[in-house]
Image 1 (cartoon, rainbow, N blue to C red):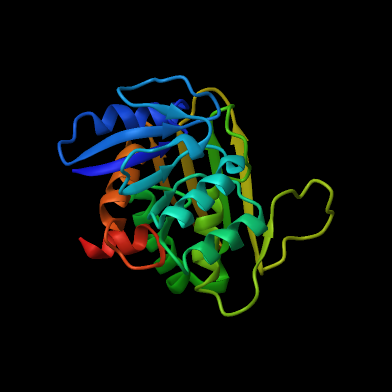
Image 2 (image 1 turned 135 degrees about the horizontal axis):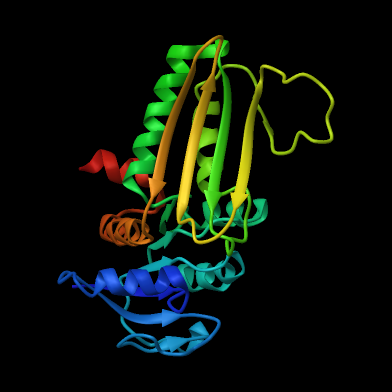
Length: 252
């Protein structure tokens, strides 16, 4: 039985993970970590990790960027693998994540959906086929409670495309203040926030007289819950290093 500490257990994603995990017989959430220590499941919830005494195999973090530093320290002190599914980190925190991966296994992904990672493989192929003749724009849509913009997934998609391009690429988030033609080395990234949109990502390749769009729509948060639990299974027993959904997919 895989024993999990869930960070952000009282949030919407945390509750979704609890619900999905309840139907799995090979893992168990044994405790939670949250800014509010209210118990929402059949396990203790801590707002101070020093009080956590449970036997833990893997940590899953699906919370807020500010919650990661003490959690990362806890993982390092206890030599525990950690799945980081939160987005919106500062550059310094990303460096801290990479540094931690030198000592413990870290699964770090901007999106826990299998479909999104398939989309990434498709757009990388599209870039190699279409090349510089097509302009690339990414449009992401999320609910009105999402804090970071653009989404971590949009940046993950842009980074994957950029790796396929030989020349330096510039990300453009806002054109209203620039009165110039669109440069060829640009990837436009646009954010929409409204209602209860779970997550939509469109990657547009716009060429001369034709447009190709690759899209992914999340209809439920459960797909991210399943992904994070699969990541926990995958990460347990791994050596120190940084892993992502690509590693999980290729292991199947």
